[in-house]
Length: 88
Image (cartoon, rainbow, N blue to C red; front, side):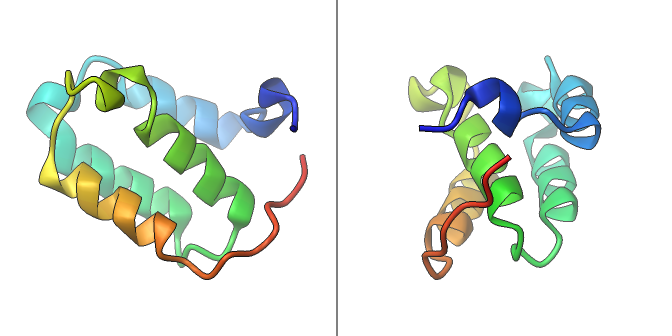
């Protein structure tokens, strides 16, 4: 397993995550659009992994954050052809 610190070591990703802290209740759709913009055309496995890990974290998993947009984005990532994840 890769070291999580290496996986998330990306200034663009860190800034994006920080921008969404505390906003999911009112801005789930907007946040999902930001995540989709970050992912682009879903061709970078490491970005896909970062976003999927983020969206399956505790707040989402226990239902504290719920949104159909989140469910669709998770599904879109999970339905991608399986490729090896880029190693950091």
